[in-house]
Image (tube, rainbow, N blue to C red; front, side, top):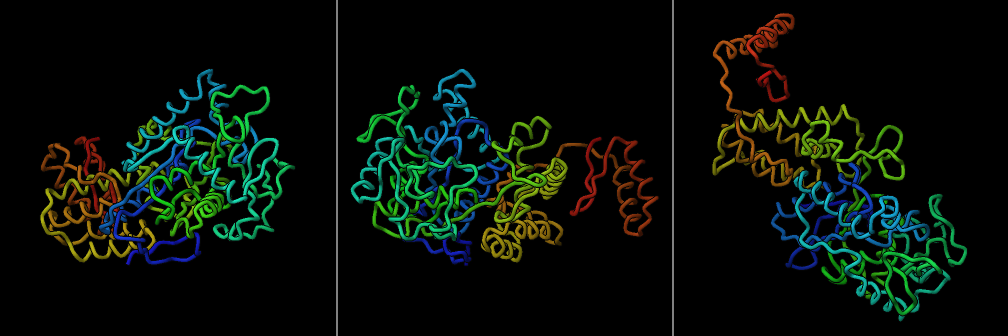
Length: 459
């Protein structure tokens, strides 16, 4: 059985799609005012792991992702400046230029990380009519009201508000990073349409029945997901920071507009990537990008490998030492797979079953990786192991099927020295083992000791 932890119900549930058709999966996309940092990218790696696991289980997946290129304000709520317009102003460029620039960088990052391209991607600026139509539906239901700066959703009109985050409406208070709007009826009320300020010339604004302005940040995801996936669908993913506000608001406005519940059957959220004492983020001023990783000569897939070693619902402690260790581990894994030779029609059923059980247990990638390592150390023939690795890598996405042996000639004397070194290590004669390593180095080779055994490479 394929089990997933559902944020909505706070428990692990057996996945059961609504109907026999494609599984509808919506992934909250980036706000394209700057490059995504590694914490952002971890969230998309988790979503990709979920999609790959669904497909591994035989499901066809329709994955939809939004690109937020308008409406996300600087305080992550409904006040402040638009993040993209601010970025454009600082760069001396148009908002559209900035948005397209960082959108391209984002998708380049996904390609380098071997993240599958969403089935459908929509930009907020291309769906303004959809969003205005959604506000009209909410207005007809009498759940929105007007203030001097916009049209707001009255959260008291939605009795299930707070269910996703496990917080009652009465407990909701304006957060420390949210500018308090005295015209709001409740701290949790949120904008579905914002007015352009008097005398302000915005680059991104549109006419609407309520005045010139732009859609609220939360509105786009409801409009886009329902356009592509219908009023109810199976899966919605995002980071844990979206739970208490953004996703809570999506549920409220979507279910109110359609009168159908639940809007989404399974809500899945990835935990933060954290540095010592705090999470990584643009607002924290401590962001590390994938470009920073490649500038250090580290394969982007080493970051994917690092993320697979921690469950998606656990915080991932990041350090450069940890990433460099993962890079070394990934190189060793690649080399070991390369040494297996060509694959066969039949793999190692025992390990494939254990892998399936691990990954189907709420995407337990660390346990699935452990099964992979055990397989590689097993006594099965190399061609059978290679076939099973190929099957497992459909989920891991590490491109292990591309692993080919290095075409380097290893002198017989080096093979003999390596065999003698292994005998010394097994006899715990580490002084002799170090001496033999040095003898190997004189022939131009380095020995890497890995969990899968020693590996030779050119020095």
